[in-house]
Image 1 (spheres, rainbow, N blue to C red):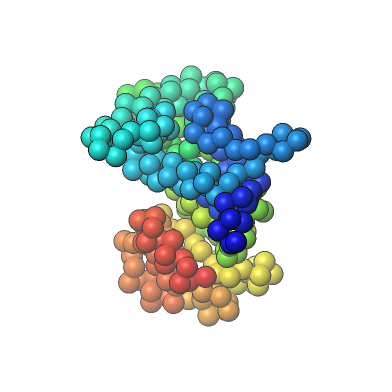
Image 2 (image 1 turned 90 degrees about the horizontal axis):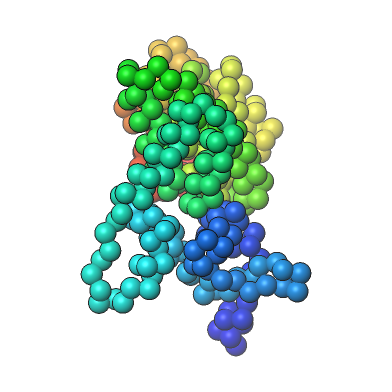
Length: 298
């Protein structure tokens, strides 16, 4: 009886998004452009997904995580089990990066907006960051020495990311049901794109963020965590922290708050021992290990 109920159960797109970590815009794009998932429809046209649909979406996500671009996923899914593995089509990812970089270099906000919306509709945030956004920013950074427009292009792309990705983070946090994190950056690190990328990863994995990009002064974050009913405080650290922060400010925050304090980012890995001495918990950079560490923290 339970098996029959599971087979006939249907779920709205919002619930499917929460279960799979794939936002509704992306689910609709996969259906419309690639025919990957074909949900049923209500009389009013609302999508309803079966358990089999959800399993298929999870397979798609797993393939994307291996480096296969969305344009080749259907080919891989339909390939016989005995067939040789398909190449991982780096050229498809390269095309996404090139188009995004060229749009930024055009210094045309309308064009950049259209390109960003297009590519971001096709992939979960973690895949988008790893395969497209981070490489595009790194490419513009390398161009700065040769092309005087590259610095302005990078600035424009970062602005676009803060607006579009920030909106997604805000909306997804409202829908999520996971642990609530008071998320901020150490002084001076709030504008680093990696702080934004970490926030995308967190909301994609069901965390609810109360995001305060500029936590000045740091010692009051404990009161803010209590007001927000946060399960933990998570700080992003990119640059080497100063001695006043390590010797006074961060230990004072840890002592004043009743919730655990974690530190993520490159500096958290480089200075693990120093952060542990403050009472904060440094977290690993690798995504899966970081998420596992967060489960223990919050």
